Image (cartoon, rainbow, N blue to C red; front, side):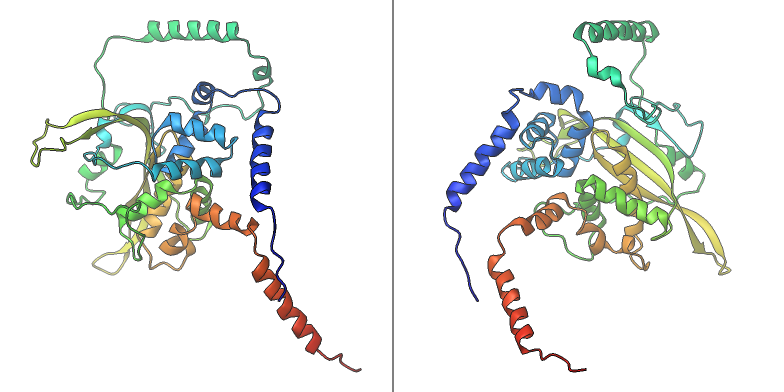
Length: 371
């Protein structure tokens, strides 16, 4: 087997990195972090979710450094996250404490507290807005002034409202099972390798860290027929969730002794999935199970798809790929999947030459077939 070493590798790599910087700067335009933060909410939210690191500023920096490549930005964020010390764990957060910005239900028209549409592209026309090509600062300032005046005239003095969960009303009717609170410490997939069969806490962590497109694709596959799940979205919530931690030097602490360290913006989804169960007479009855999805930022499609897969993976006995936790969880990770695909660009000279030599030897040993 012939093997030819590549010379000058270090110089070639340095030249490639310089060329990369040149491609970013050649038009002599500098994209400021502040611009990314103010105008690319969706991209920032997606990067934070897949990197499982909540920092809009670092996500904006990663997006700039990666020139808008999502997979590269997530890789940068994950790499940085691995260098950070974990100083404490937060207390368990409850969605009822969320300061809600958007809250809708596709299952009920009227829900306690009402539907809050909030900011979303759901109701916009999917047509290119060519006016955005000629936006002027003075026009933006004028529009913002008018809009703020409308908000001020519509606002009335009122207390902060916390909204109940839609599913709680169904539980009160006995339509959903009530479970005992589980205070067991969750598995931490960033400190312990994923094992199969996995716990639900581990699955939820992998799903919320999963690549948005991959999670959405598998959720869609389940809807389309690979599992034939068709849930109803009980509730979608987008808002800010307060985070509290215990004092690091006090072993026992009562409620109210915690410290508020800030809040995070999240999307939470609870989907109602119809399932058939056998009753006492061995007849099929219809019941509902809950699929759960949660992720950083306003990331609704991913959260809904996550809720679908969460319910699917509770039924690993089903003979569908979307119910196979190994198939789902090992293929949705952004860094794992893109890294393994991208490694194919790296030198494989020795292995490929070995395969070529094997084929050549086989070809030499093959005799032509006489007719």
